[in-house]
View 1 (cartoon, rainbow, N blue to C red):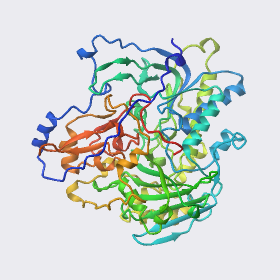
View 2 (cartoon, rainbow, N blue to C red):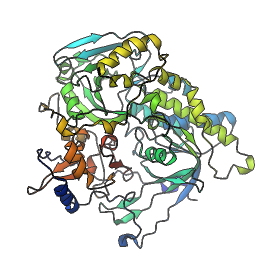
View 3 (cartoon, rainbow, N blue to C red):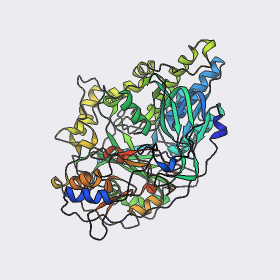
View 4 (cartoon, rainbow, N blue to C red):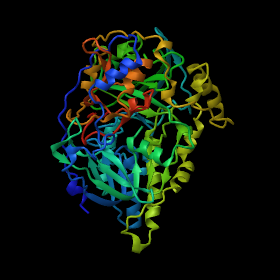
Length: 622
């Protein structure tokens, strides 16, 4: 076997170019037969090797497909809070027991934290358990929350709402953080403890043993052209085999999605429901900067039937006046004309919000999907050869708007289960690569404070599905949840997957959005430029389609092409040429890895896969 470090050495970011969005064509009558003819003649959209087999393709006939391989005791896919907490906890247990198991972590971003985006207010409960001396270690938690506010917005007014002690919105004892910086710091701790961290290498394929148990993963091939043919620089990815493989890819992880489908891990829970969070980092006028202030709003610009709300967090960093601002919209929204990016821009123009940004400087932008299903949507977590940890499994506490602490705890519990299983291997079999049973992890998590916390708030998110909409949620949260703390004798349902909630365009009213003023509100292209996104333009699109004809025949014909609006990076465009019917163009170079398209596509035709290693956004402390 080849040592991992000897093979995984490429870390240079590929060249890229940002694709400017072409204005969407005007709505017009469309015939399925005409669309089908156009789709057939249009350029091929999907050429990725996960969707288009190479067997029988003469361009690949002389290529050696053998992969180098290596073995490790525990493999962790994803260098976020959950994955790093799992890695650190494993090494702690090794040190306590005087043993040395090999722990390997893969992260698709070129730097730990480079793809991390969150508000974020961090509840330090899990961190206190994992690293009680985190303050002495220099953890970047520099802004304790000093004041909380919650308001309801109408188009022209702000109505203050109470933040009661002990309520989920009370942030006493929490910290405003730049989560990417926190993740980077956790990575330093992990490496100091002996974890092998390989950043810039995405896992693209699951590997299985003959008995169907999880064996490990393979990293992405490099040197494949956009048309799916091999370049002169082609190099096969590497196989990593492990006794335990933990998937901590974050929300809507591509391998997690595949594994849940193959093993039926989500067969006994409700479909996950999601939100999209959009965020900007600003440097504001010092007179408007209030370090430690946490502000949330609900209401405008969302209507009462659409889940949404804002956050505004004032950071305390030496010599700077930074503010994190963002908006979250539930992806179970109904109107295909809704544009999450433009709703975020519109929120900033509210008369009570706009003054914060006036005279300031926008520094960065990004977006990421988040799990909102809570208790009802948690799948089976442990299985033969592996486990699901973190946001890929879905532990966000929705009314708290926090999931880092629960994600970290899930990783720690999975680490303890894996360590016990490793210790139980007889000494004469320690070197054998056998899949370990991780099923005890489920019971461990259900006995933890994570499960208790999710159980207490399980009905908050689905309470918005009543005819009262968001008002029903306010009523439930303010009365029942406050009084019973989750002890009510019923559990509400999310009532189906998000993509099923979208209505045909013919049943909905188009939404008119104001033009950006380039002072407080901005256009999409200039925003995506702030993400630092890089993808080699000459590689197969990682936004793969199950059927290249579906976008025009169904998504555009019925829903007026919602991809061109729900994507927060201008990846999807319907364009016309010479007066012909529209065709879909995918600007994969723009993708910021938010996963919204994989979730909200009404045909479930888009399948997000990991791009060539190193590609994606380059968030700096987002």
